[in-house]
Length: 107
Image 1 (spheres, helix red, strand yellow):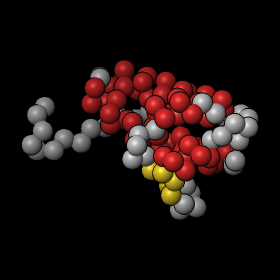
Image 2: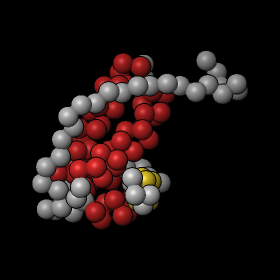
Image 3: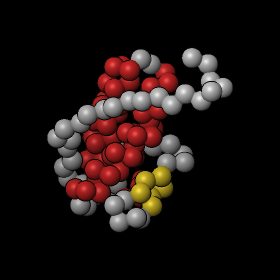
């Protein structure tokens, strides 16, 4: 697997869960949760831990690679089988959170 594909899939997971984490906690705690989730995701990929990946990836998970290929939860889980990835790491991560407020949502 190419390193860029891992980066794009990881980024997709972090972005999808950012809104959920932010809505449940304060900003800095949400950042910590997203970073923790990213580390759990990378560990699950390297260990081919299907149970952990199923916990992390939503049923309606979608990821778009740099090539334009679209991967759903099933194809992503199928991709991360034992011995498919031997090493994965996050060299640097910065989490920026912002919140869109719809006019009908309470503060």
